[in-house]
Amino acid sequence: MAGQGNAAASLFTEPEMEFLGEDETISIIPNVRLEAVQLICGDFGPFYPQIPVKVPLWLGIAMKKRSKCRIQPPDWMSVERLAQVLDDEREAPREFQPLPFHYVEISRLLLDNAREDFENNFMVQSLLEDIKDVRWDKVEAGLKTLSTRTHAVKLKNVSAMEVNRMRNFTVRALQSFYKHDSEDLVKQTGLESDSQTTSTSSEHLPRRTLRPR
Amino acid sequence: MSKYYDLNDILVEDEVVSTVFHHKANGVGYLDPGSEDDNVEKGAVVELPLWLAQDLSRRKIIQVNLPPCFGAKVRKEVQADPACVNLRSKCPYFYEMGCKLADITGDPSLGGFLLSTLRGRYRDILCKALTSTITSTPKFMTLLTQEETHLFEAGRDSMRTFQKWRLQGPQLERAPILGRKRR
Image (cartoon, rainbow over all chains, first blue to last red; front, top):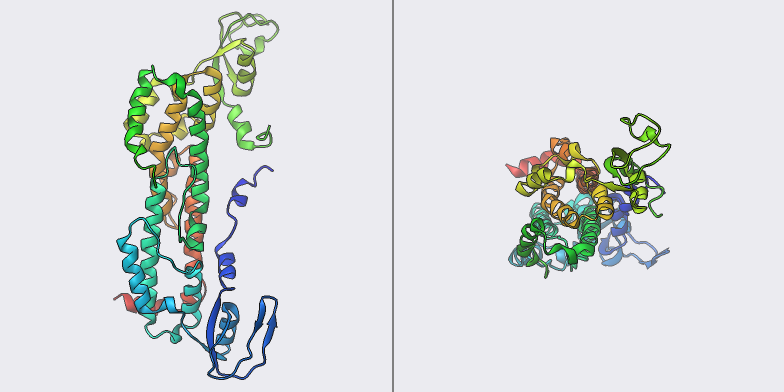
């Protein structure tokens, strides 16, 4: 029991997230003829040259490494779409734009292994980088508003990697706030007369406006 | 009982608090270095570890005084600027001990004080945890209590592992191209 607290808190490491992201499907254009492959996650193929086919990302990358296929960049990884997402992302300071749940992992894997299949790979990369930064900024801003009455946080469209990155800190922060808040609540009734606490409770007021998130 | 095996909890309870005896106690003179015989007189001020004080005060044998780290002076300091106060030097288990003492002493303002301290320091910890780089071990950490250190490390470590993941692998080979792009 003792001493395992820290390790248990972080459920996934980044390579594990990458592994999970590799299960997403992607469409490839093979340049070899190959029979259908039967995998635990399903059957893929048969592969004919120049006929696009959907496969798991890991299979696509494995074939790409042996130059048996070309990877078709997913729709959301086109420059126009990413620029649009970035704009929307900047315009809505509290919302996250819908992107694939594993977009960080997928884009990294694709740009690492199949860079030449993207027309504008520098542009795509820098757009993704910007999107990532803008989104992380929002996460940080959200974390700053964590306060005493926050018992849960609702975040729509946050990607797996972003969740994983903030998980440890958020959980710990919420835990300690919860602990001290409940401690406080017990005594709230007897507080009113004390001069010390009137000064602190006046401090509470401006913060409470942050509550509706 | 859930915290029975928690090492930190044991360490918290080992902190010393000053207490006042309500009754005369026979045969425990070793608790009070100032006593001449084997007894502790009524009204004697004795320093006891928290675990003992907790039990004795529950039986109304002693009264627990608030340690100086929760006193008026520290409260003023914390009110002025929570983030800059060196709580580690005052009491490394500030929050845990505060929670336990709020229970024993029945001080109604203590809970609120702990909460406002945590809230005041939280933002600073957040910013520093998320921006700390791989190499730096900031001297800011020397100001933090145990609980805050855990919070800080949780944030910093997940940032670090993420950075590491992004920079590892084939991306390292591509560095010169990236360098050219930036220019």
